[in-house]
Length: 366
Image (cartoon, rainbow, N blue to C red; front, side, top):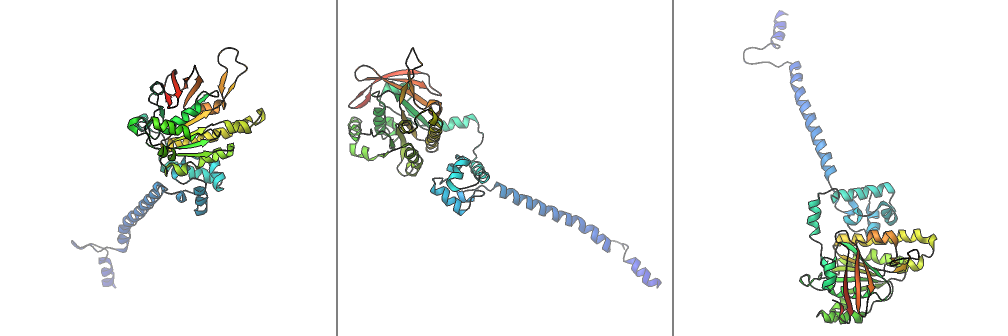
């Protein structure tokens, strides 16, 4: 018995350089290994979660809460890219695809995050503004007033009484847009929404001849749609995106912006509804301008304010809604003979001023 006890005892002691590991020591040595393995698993799990969180949606169907059916509805409604979703409002997505408010908000947030639409430094904005183009009016006086011409990525509004030359501006810019950039043009085509049935192709022909352009090609590069009511006009603006890239559109003209709205919404009781629709319509145009780096020109009608006893009582239709959405506003008025006067009323970067020009068979000239 003593020998057996001695043997058992010998297994628990160290003999020289060789150490016999007991079960207790074996457990003690394996504890750190187990902890290390658990730590590795935790780290790998955290890394996978982080990579999943950092994974940005690339298509509309990748957005949270947007399945295949909802994606088809959004694409059918014109929301074909992540940019379209990012600049939309939850109410617009709810109406287009039947999404819930929370789902629509999550989808918009995810789209904005994937495009990194957050704060940025002013120097980046300055760098991006270098891509803005300038469209010549064909008059040196007007171009000087506008620091080179109509700028892209914004809305330019011209308003004035009848026969002040608003539509003549539209015809002129239909042609100058097609000029190459080195001649002051944008090297592209024009989309024309006509709400007053005032488009005249013969004026395009005479102006194109003056600029030494092929008149038939000039006509082919202008795409016109007749707007019969305010809803139709809004739909035409929303569908414009479908052909902007396909037809290399560089200018969108709406002549006139307020004509249909003014005819349909009569009386003060309908003013709120009219203004809301006008606001939505102009926001659609603004998105197109910024997303595709194109110029937007809208003409506006005027009214006479009876409360103004002294000075010019002429005021543009649309009130503050149109004023806030138009980045550049020009008031046109007729002078003697062929002469016209353009007054720069509002611009975020240019001082107020006036320019005298004339409208002839060749278009707008000094």
